[in-house]
Image 1: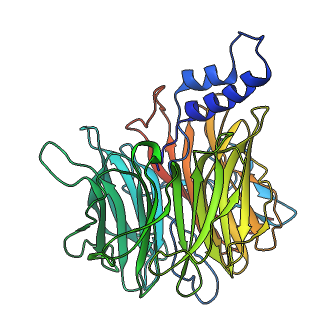
Image 2 (image 1 turned 45 degrees about the horizontal axis):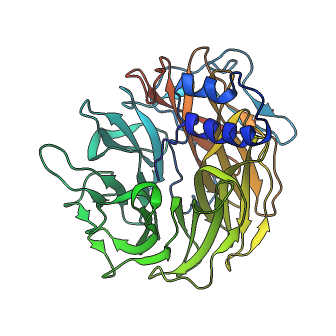
Image 3 (image 1 turned 30 degrees about the horizontal axis):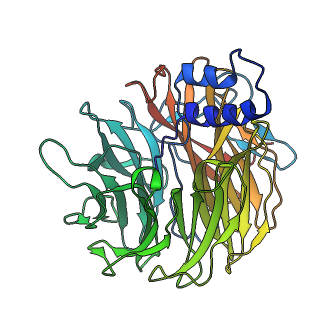
Length: 455
């Protein structure tokens, strides 16, 4: 899936729906404003995490940025806090050490012996993006320098914990100097260093979107779409750091599909979600449970006539899969939701996620022990892109949303989260000089901060 789904595309889809209801107005629309702005949504996707520490805590991360102001956020004023649940931003966001120069699309994974690894992309000036990885200790201090681990055209990559180390899975692209078109897998040490040569998944030259998950001390799973705009359907294939574990992938759908997502479930099972673009209005949400070989247990659960747009994000915890997605109704209104499924793939609940305004999309779904999913979102409204977090329990109970503060003229994109229900760490790309066209300026950098008790 194209991980920087264009706001203009989302706005145009909504405007198209609106035009079906009103053929007499030839004036400017919200779609015109979005196209003129050129800003993008949906850079990030979730990463599967190793289990949190035994105490359920996730230490706040001081990523080496300037000393935060405890009384004011980046935009001034009080830090956001939901007084009803005693949860909010504990201090102003600070810069992540070394993640600047156009840094965007953060991914985070826990290190086996404590601490964190962070991955991100920066433009390389040749029409492609370099993928960087850097390790941090439990207090957020860098462990060594950032390492370039891959190159690709799109923010199609996942950083995953595999128990004794890490794995980077990404969609690579050939350059003038050569290279490989398709999915690659790179093993990394527990310290975040490159370990051996990357493995190439042959026959994936026409893949446009990929998602990966990993079972600690076990195997990984990739799901991907093939062909332009997913015309070739959806596939699943088990992998290791040395390559594919089966001779051929399993085709889950032959219909034109986009935005595949996968998460490891209970032992020997994986949840897979995607959007069917061959349906009307303009897409259905599908969810299916597969085994370790990528073979489905049953037919996919289809939410027909869903009007799904944007990207699909997926996580698993406590016997529940959570799928974050967005839909556009017949009036052009964008709504963000999280649909909860049981281990058989049946719907448990599908609450609306309040918070996003204008054109909103989900950028991450993360499992937060012991019973909560963190739903990260971003929206395009009133000429700017901002981000926030809403928490949802496995019972479908939704908390008040928290919007992160932002300086005037800045844009925030690609929020991802990790931690526990008691303490969450967030990462986001902040661009003080956002270009009018799609993409990021060279001034963009990653920011991080802790969310927790805030009374």
